[in-house]
Image (tube, rainbow, N blue to C red):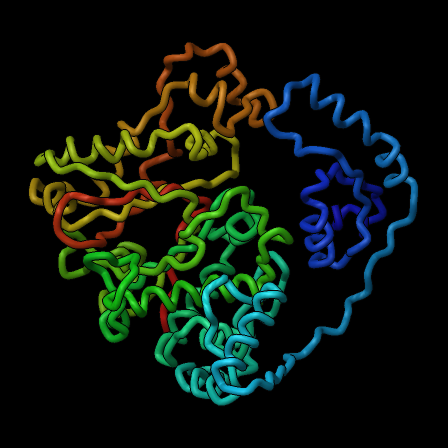
Length: 437
């Protein structure tokens, strides 16, 4: 809409009242904070055609007004610099509590206590970065905030990171800026999207990033996992402006959004590691970022053949509510990621199956009946790709693949013994970046 308006084409947005702050913040991020909105009482989801017509009809006067009045195109405003705050209290602990309350009131915290980002602590954190503090890592969506090395360090301090964690954080931020990651959807969706970081190579061992039992935490063994993942969420909030209720319109939320970071269990991986599969050398340190929508436990304690283990995965992924029909919409990428425990990986590999064999099996066997997408899910053949409109009259028990092809499935070996793996539904595609010290 902003691009149309800047080109002189009048536009107006039908906007549910609950999303007004989201629309205003997004428009401001794109340089036009006074975009025309026509307010409607409820989101246009889960409504019958008749109810939709009634809701929209009530907004027609606002639509006409929005199309006929002039819209101010905001001139770029000078970007504010970093601010310093002081907290006076009878004791250092009281000052700590006061700072945390102040930060939380301003929306800068995740709800857990924050480590005070004092100048001394930030300077110490910056010793772990090989780049100057003023270097721009990227412009981070959705608020188009400038992610400098110093701003990354500030959020790393608040999360409880150590200086040696900085290279992983910088690489992860670079990865999230890659269009394939689809940062905007991960950040602003009404779904519970959250980035997961999968660390490979020597740095995973150097930083003691847990790849085994309880790799996604909590606990002592996952300390590095927890603080690195937490720092990414604070970076998304305080640099990318992914603030809940303003740009992040997640309907219910998810504990995944606090922190998701693991290392691949390369010692127990019978195949080539994830980063090698994605074109990096075995001794290269990398971080892979992926936008997780939901995390589903995949328990299989009985199977001892590749087909049966993978059939359990195939049956886990065919969920109508997890955008399994999104590949039919053209241009929409919602790829799944499998965190396979060493036991399941060994069963599959011991009989000569490669990782690509596993992906091929999943593609041909992870199917869903058309009825589940026709009456639910997120696929609408009448309003999307014309090539799929024939599905309106297709048999309801016809089986459809849940992904566009074998390469939409991604696999990393993570976890301890016993047959419990995880199936992650996601948005976008994984992006792997080298970690540079």
